[in-house]
Image 1 (cartoon, helix red, strand yellow):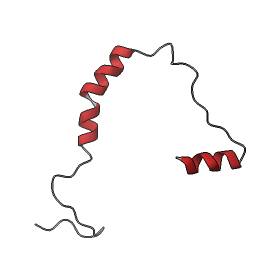
Image 2: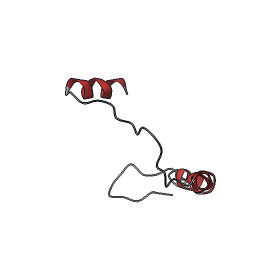
Image 3: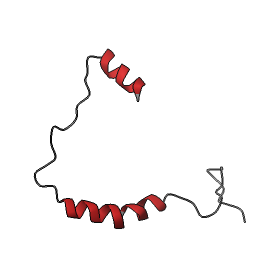
Length: 61
């Protein structure tokens, strides 16, 4: 992250962060999404079995 900051600074850019949260933000909906949806999204990236490193051949049993 420090390298990114140095690059931004070198080019005259600065770190920008929102000064406040959006007024329309629904905290209850955000918490619900974090508890129910995010674990499913995060887990779906993991493969159950070992994959193949070949782009042209499928996995071998």
